[in-house]
Length: 142
Image (tube, rainbow, N blue to C red; front, side, top):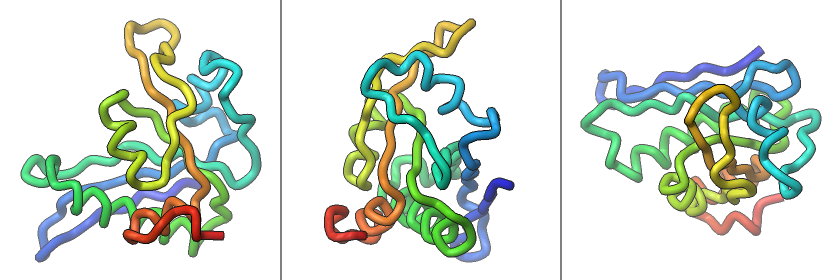
């Protein structure tokens, strides 16, 4: 149902990521959307959550490693599943980083019910995000 990928560099595992289809009640995005306000999109077929992106401690501040891993994951998703739109949850600071990769923040300080945690919710059309991750202007992708 979902996609889990690992990333290697020189034979060393440097990260993992999970991409899960929305619509099955399995994602944090689905839990948060009701509290995301009027700008929140209505998810549909082909919408997926990108999450659990973890990089090895030595790579966490390496924006290029993040870009390459995320690009590989999005391209894999596009080649192996019906991926139309991507969603993610993150901190506000990270949402600014993901803006470089074709994502747009649509809700900020969204509370996770029953906790003190708050998230920024971001989304983007999968093909433009893939293009932005490849270092090309996101608006040129169709």
